[in-house]
Image 1 (cartoon, helix red, strand yellow):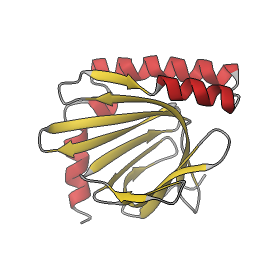
Image 2: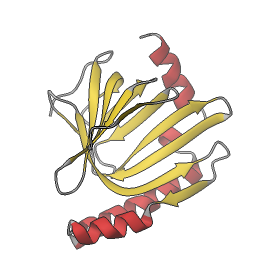
Image 3: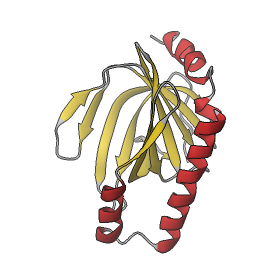
Image 4: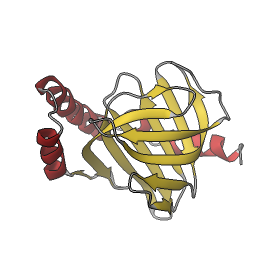
Length: 175
């Protein structure tokens, strides 16, 4: 696996379990990268959907990927606080093309007061049947939903009070 360089701009590619490309984020700046952890940031970046439609993100975001976690976390800096969007996903890989992961539909939205909401359970069930997610994957994903909720409640990792702010300050040095 290639480890991107700090300060390098990369793309992020999200796939579905059946292998088709789901979404691409352009021009994302690497803030930290090791074999186990990648932290990136972007602001007003183009996102292209699998159907070719594209849109621009509205606010700065710090994204956290871990090679042993079946989720990734996006912390979005908005005027009224930090919102998190957490994707239940495969662990990431990096190659010469992009940082890549499989999106498994389930998401958790976390509000600035750290309340949260599990989203897209119906989409997950539909895709689990359509794409034949193996039982072992289903079990791993459900376990990681619980792990992610534990992290949120404990303010662990990207949910700690200073995590997003400190990485955003680092990101500003690259702009």
